[in-house]
Image 1 (cartoon, one colour):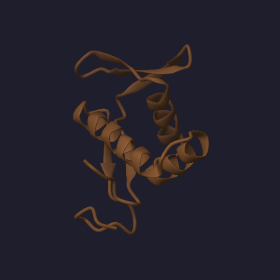
Image 2: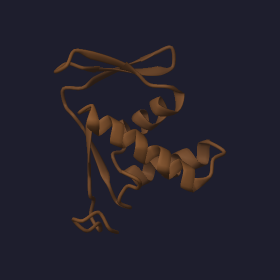
Image 3: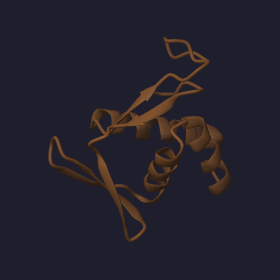
Length: 104
């Protein structure tokens, strides 16, 4: 996933549980019995998406919080989401306004 549709929304898998430990998010994926610890930025992305599932809203919040190039941030968030999908932690879905083929 090199990019995320502009209006994409995230559906966190309902069986995935999380806790904040010393400022970092720790995830429990019970199907495989895995615990995963996210770094500071990954933790912030996860927290934003738990609160508001629109990927664009998370990206805009991160742009306001970090001194980072927007293109780089979008790429990094896309990579994070792709990895989370591979681990079956969440699903990224096109939102209203995005075509089924991912364009937007």
